[in-house]
Image (cartoon, rainbow, N blue to C red; front, top):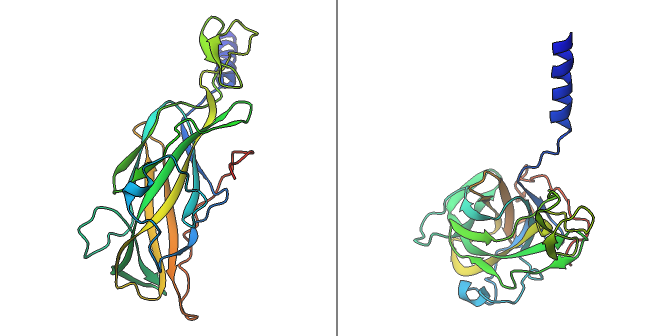
Amino acid sequence: MKQRTILFIILITICSLPLYAAELTYDMSTGKISGFDLTNPDNPFTPASYANSTEVWSKAGFVGRLNYRGAPTTLTFSNTGSVATGTQNNRFYFTFNTNGTIRLDRWREFFLVTRVKGLYHNGAQHDFSGTNTVVANNGGTVAITEGAGPELVSSGQSGYNATGGSGVYNGSNGFKYKYKYQYIWVDVTVIMTDKKKNLNKGYYITQFTASSPIGVNYTMVLIGERDPKNNQNEPSSFYFGVESIVSNPFP
């Protein structure tokens, strides 16, 4: 009986410890996962035009944001869906998928514009990167240089307060957080290029995955369209659950 009591106490102690793991989720915010108009290219439509400090979340191709918690890492964006035919570019593509018919030789090319931002523990927003990262090709990466999460430090260790200030925690001075931010989020925007092939009327889909060496990943399936006919139906069952975990979103 004594051994069982000791084991029970140990189990209670272990289960009561806070366990934190890296996570990557999606928040639609003011974005979308369907209704992308493939008819015309964006203006401008070249990757170099977006490698600057001008934000693009207000463009029609805004998908939403990926929310990240964990240590600093790198996200790799990979095409995990159908592979378009008849192109030499290693980019991303919406391919034809209408009424059960899949045509990989009908497509519109696009790339991604991302922007890494942070949310302080007091809820204030911080555009700490100050610039866009363009994912021009399949396999492109986005560096997350800051960590995020609710982990706490012990007295005598360096930490951050709710507004992002740093200092040594003494047990009461507020520098209790391990990471400067409670969340890192990555704005993601689709930019259509001028490359297309057999872009017939109908619906198109694309699938890409953001993944990290530490094991977190998130797959997105987006639906585009080019002036679909009344008898053409949007592909179904492509909605990935949206988890809104940021209570004070960007506009």
